[in-house]
Length: 336
Image 1 (cartoon, rainbow, N blue to C red):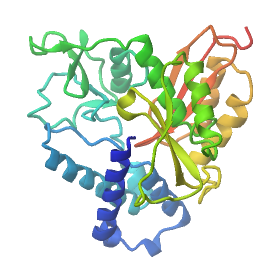
Image 2 (tube, rainbow, N blue to C red):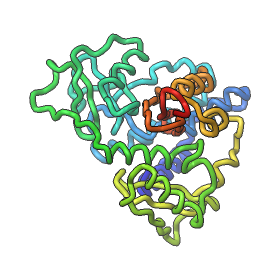
Image 3 (cartoon, one colour):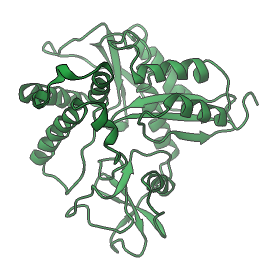
């Protein structure tokens, strides 16, 4: 998330606070489980709006506010409504996947009946077929992947417009940058796993970039203005436009390991992945099994499991945003 995005996010929270969309419910009647559901729902509010149709900037801002208000309203009614909402894998998000059994123009059509979500692997066709399966739908016939604005769309080849632009497979560098971003956003042993300061943060980010072969991506301190709100001793990392440099923004948050709700779903999953995957040498199949067991019935985006025989042990990243998503990369057998 860029500095501008974070500022917009803070503006959204201010708007929601003023609107107070949860006043329609008597929250004092909720039990502990429902209150925890509400806390987690707010924590994992989707960062990407539904794309239906292409918005003007003003409409885009209004849709963000509506999405935030809807999330607060949804989780505020308690566990029952939260669990009843079973249409999680919906297409139409910016920079995400939109999967269509029948092609429709995203500029003029409501995309809430499509499937999709964040990328799982670097293969959008395989990912969309997985989203179709998770949504209880038939595979997309003769699928091809195209790009439209900031969207990747998978649809039947004989239905897409003749002028459509084919989606390109990410380059090795783009994939490395994606992995770097996941590491910076990771709760297990990455950028959100502990308190980074100016003395430790840039050096850690430099080592991560080098590990991924991105030795030419600079690491810089993000200079904060005098009016910037400083929320704690710990910093966070961001990559403007996904290309670099890596910016370390100091004094922006409390220690991620000191949670208000250490028993929350996210932190329980983080701790389990630390203990059973990150600090042990396990194979990719074993890590997938462990992750599935830790997830249980909690909603999550599909786990990304990439086979990489060059590794001796499986690496793990836990990222949140709309929901939780785990990224695993490792060998078929550990210790080879």
